[in-house]
Each structure stands twice: as C-alpha cells, then as structure tokens.
Image (cartoon, rainbow, N blue to C red; front, top):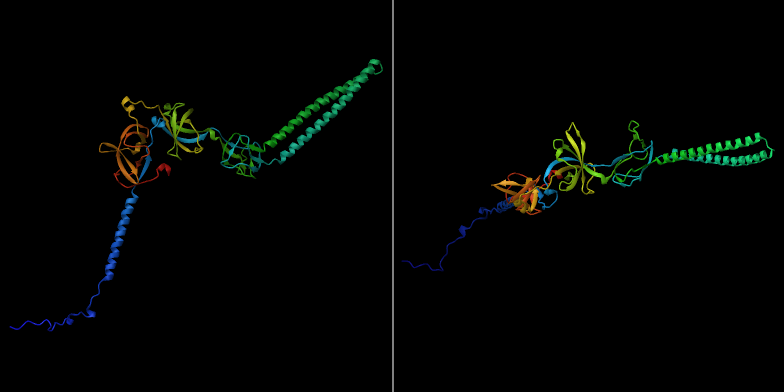
Length: 422
C-alpha cells in the first residue's frame, strides 16, 4: 500500500476551466429595465383609470330638504298655471306734435319721475310764433290805453257841453255829438279789451305749443325701451314708411307688477279673488313668492278655452322684471289632519320626485361628499309636488330628485344642474 499524498504535493491545474472572453454571454440588463418600466406604466395607468372612475360617478339632480313651516308649503295645491309678469301701468310715451328730436335725456334702465323731461323736439318755429303772439298782445294793449285816453277826453267834452246846454249857450246837436263820441269810444274800448283777451289766449297757445316740444313722463317708473334718437322725426300718428317714429320711450311702473296667467275654463271655478297663490319665476326656480289672486277677468277666450287671472305679489323684489315667465300654484286651505297625524309634525319637506320604493320601504338617496347614501324615511301627506318627511331626514340634506333607476348605496355621484337652471 502506497503512502498518502503529502499536502505539499502537486495540485490540480484549474486554468483549463477558465472561460474565454469571446465565449462569455452578456447579462440582459436592457431587457430587465424595459420590463420594469412597462410594469410601472401599466400600474400608473391602472391607478389613474380607477381614480377617474371613482371621481366621475353617476350624474344626478339634487334638491335640499326644506324646513317645515306655516307658509304656503302647508297648503295643498289646487291648480297650476303658467303665464308672465305684467305691469298694470305701462306706457309708450309719444310726442303730442310732429317734430324732429333734438335731445334724448333717458336710457334703458333709468328711473324717471312723473313730469320729468324725456326728450326735446325742435322748437325754433314755436319760439317765433310765441314772440309774434306776444307782440300782438302788446300792440293790442297799447291800443286799449290810447282809447282810454280818448275816452277820458270825450267825457270831459261831454261834461262841458252839458253845462253849456244848461246855460242855453250850447245847442242840442253839439250835446248829442259829444254823447255819441263817448259811447263810440266806450265800444272801441270793449272791442280792445276783447282783442287783448284774444291776444293773451294766442300767447298761451303758443306757449303750450312750445311746451309740447318737451316730452314728459306721464308717471314715475322705469324706462324699459328707448325708441327714438336725436335727428329722427316723431309723430303722434303713423306717417307711413319707416322714417317717422311714433314713440319716444316705453315706461313701466315697477310698483304695479303682477302676474297674469291663463286658467283652463274647466277649472276656473276653483279660483276665487283673494285666495293664496305661490309664484315661481322661470329665472329663479328655487324661489317661491307668495301672493294673492287680485281678480278673475270676466271673459273667456273661445279659441284657447281659458280665462285670464291676475294675481299680486305680497312683496315686490328688484329681481322681478316685466315679461318674465312664471308658474303659479293656486293654494287651498290648510289640510285637516286626524288627531294622530296632527300630533306628528314633519321634520322636513322634500320634492315628491325624490321618494323611491325598495323592498317595501320608502327610501331616498342622500348625496354627501360625492357619495350616495340610501336612507329609509317615513313620509306624511303630499302637498302638490312636495311631500312631508316625518322621520329619516334633516333640513338641508341633499336628496336625489333625478337620475338613473339603478342607484346604489355607496355609489359615487356628481350633481348636475336641473333643467330649469340651464
């Protein structure tokens, strides 16, 4: 048996196991970087898509739950009608004479007072006529003064002739001549007095003609239309063609604004003067304006089968403008409730369109921070298009009044403007 090899003996040569440089394979660093970037882009896109999906949500229309009160919401709506805001006093102001406009002192939206000058017409001809009338009056007055002087002299002559006739010196013929002269002068003075009156009347006519060149406001109100410009001809009657205006401006008495609606003659028996109404302007659909029926016009339109009804506002507001569209709800008396129902007072009032039925429950969807919350409620009697909520809501809660039928609890939502607000 041979002895074991010494540790200091020859070692195996491993140099033959070395890999040559041309046989080495480079690591795919670029491929790994590309794959990592691709995964990152996919993750970012997925997160953005999820975030966008969560943020957009379903579009719904909402309305705030109103606090109950003792106003118009407590009365049932008997009838609805639509019409316009109309003023009782509205005038298109025209000149009394035909003339050329030289000045316009008003503009649309300006408030004017009764008697205020709106426009000035060319008055040069009337100025000349007034000066001539005054000159004639002055001449007539001077002639009357001269006749008075002559009358005084004739009366003195008559007195002397009477004294001479009594003394037997003067003849009766001379006395008659003196008397005739006095009476003639008295007649001339009477004629002169009449001429003076006529001259003064002519002066007043000329002054009135001059005043007619000023177009004044017939009452206090608001200018809603300016229909003439300086340099145009105006006339109280149409002169034909398109070169002569018949009006200067249109003025509305804003204190006389009221509502005019057409009510179907089949339901006019429900409308009584003095009954309460609630007006809703098309421009402000969330603003309910109380008022009362002023009158029912005692005639019907045979073509439309309607009767005109006029109602007044309890309180006017600068937002109410002529010719605005308005919807009018005619309100009945406060409904009589049973003792048990009367003991339960509503906590809120919401539109009837917000109420839904699900699994034999009455529910609404409340939107809070962009998320829908399904909430069961207990409702009371309906009041037209409104309904009382006895439990489950608080005033100010935003309830969904319009949207898809398949809304879910916890669903993201976005409020959109209602059709009336567009």
